[in-house]
Image 1 (cartoon, one colour):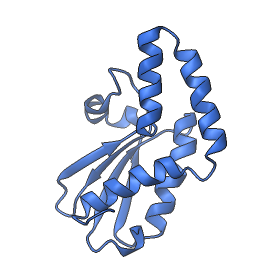
Image 2 (cartoon, rainbow, N blue to C red):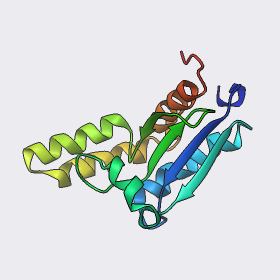
Image 3 (cartoon, one colour):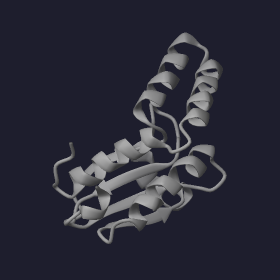
Image 4 (cartoon, rainbow, N blue to C red):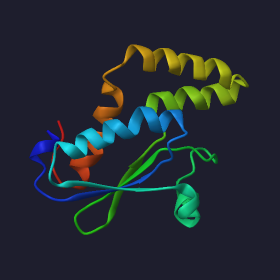
Length: 137
């Protein structure tokens, strides 16, 4: 699917190598980029662009990675991170219940059982196709 993109998609990736979610998800995004001549990634550290990073907080918190998807005219079409949507929902529920530790344990189990990272791949593909102005089914 990503190999057939017909327009350029630019991704600004806010990432640092000390973060577990970065270690899990940046290789997924990079692999997608390696499969398409139209998917371009630029990596930046959050400390290098604090004014940009502050726009992409996750529920008020500083979480990475954050992938910002831009179309061929550099118009923002969406962003993703620091983890798949249903995992972010687990964290939010954990915060609401006062038990983030249990939520993180559940996410670790999910990550361990989803070694191909298909959850992240599906969401990243959808944003890539949207940014290329293509249909994703």
